[in-house]
Length: 205
Ligand SMILES: Nc1nc2c(ncn2[C@@H]2O[C@H](COP(=O)(O)OP(=O)(O)OP(=O)(O)O)[C@@H](O)[C@H]2O)c(=O)[nH]1
Image (tube, rainbow, N blue to C red):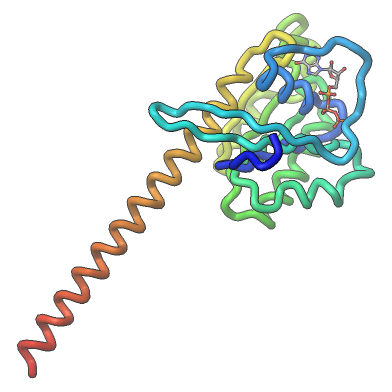
């Protein structure tokens, strides 16, 4: 993948063991690795081409290490990101507290980075509702407050995984289209302004 042009930098953030790598594995390779847990060291990069309508764009996904040992390194990876997928494990309330930490970090440092909160391992809470450690409504309220989007995913079953990254890509395309539009509008306004300034100055000479 080296040298590949990336349109959108996406960073995966969240406490260790919440399932960031599994989410990327499911999305990019459509598989769920059942073997023993291996923590990410530093970060891993993968690129994926995705279509939004007629438009093809490449997501460059940085999967960071969740261990607090690598916290300062993770900061390097969200620099310049347009989307942050901030993950927490739906069965583990401490991982939700950690997710809020990352949300604050990103909001303070990257004003153009959109935030997607992702509650992982939804298969575990679907099978056993008492396993849920994070209240859905609390998270939804927080998501609204920070103007983010919320997904509950399972990398095991694949639930909502493609949908999450598709929305990331769509939001990017829409925001870019909006920026182009406003830039075009600004150019028109400027041209209009120049014309009227010219008329004004002609009439008053
Ligand atoms: N049941 C279930 N288990 C999951 C799911 N996603 C991940 N896991 C398991 O959770 C453990 C941690 O998953 P990882 O994807 O390695 O977690 P991570 O967030 O990348 O961890 P770090 O690399 O340490 O930051 C593994 O044992 C996975 O098999 C899921 O959707 N459902």
